[in-house]
Length: 404
Image 1: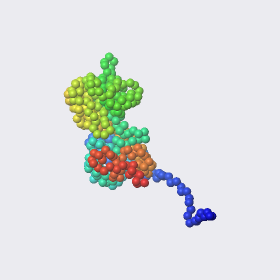
Image 2: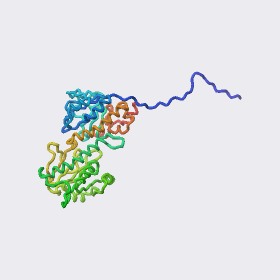
Image 3: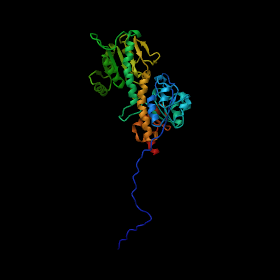
Image 4: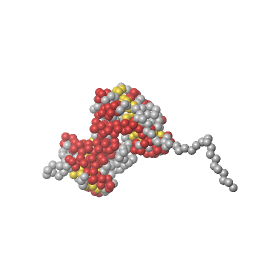
């Protein structure tokens, strides 16, 4: 039986298709607004005049509310000379599609939010309110938080800078309150020939603890560091380049060291939720009269049982004859340095968002950027917030993929 030949029809032909690549769109021009912060004791500003100058020279529009930089000693003239437009009402600055804030969104801002606005600001989990999150979701806002923003090395650059500022400031503050003029013990923080060095106990070997330790050692103090994470203690030794006295958190050892120290620093924190209380009231009562406690973890509840929230106006109180310094926002007291640090992270980030063709594009290409987003076009993408307020959680990666 003869085999039948295949029939070739000319009505269609098989051809290989070109591979389609994900091509990045051309740079997007942006309009950025910088409002004046009305949150309590917030002196920082999200972008310095120098950073604004770079953004303007790259073709972007920057609107600054009158007096936005005052807390950091930047004048309106500095911003206008850098090419920013100065506006005199809060409503006008909130019309910008991208807002850069150095304090979280507060109740007064809610009526001013625009549809589909992008907001780059801190989030302050502990002070966050459900109605603020709901209003931002309703307005289809995309919100990026300072705390969770990651860079290419996998670290959190803004948190790191603020922690470095807080760590550096601690020794200056401690020195100030140990002086006789501030009703302190009259002890010089450091080491003088023939006099035993001042003793500093640091609880927590994170960035704040590390920088505080480095500064205390530089002054000549004797430093003892506690942390339950042995890897962190090892990392601290390596970063300092010298051996310092370290210990895991063993209550008896800790109590003994606190009894004889002049300065105790609390820098323990958890990833989320409250900071662990590791020093009991009993331990504080046994400390030397006139010694000082600086609780940096106070914004997360504090790690000394005796800690109570204080402010930059009245930063200290005395309990069991021990001075307590429990100001939650230490970097705001050094606002210009803090503003420059924030600006150094945000300005390149904004340029990157523009180069990638806008926010929608950059989250597709940049995985670290996704870490910082807690609301994307009105969908809540932060699991912790969704749990806290019992709101619907949406996975950001799925959300982005579904839009492609």
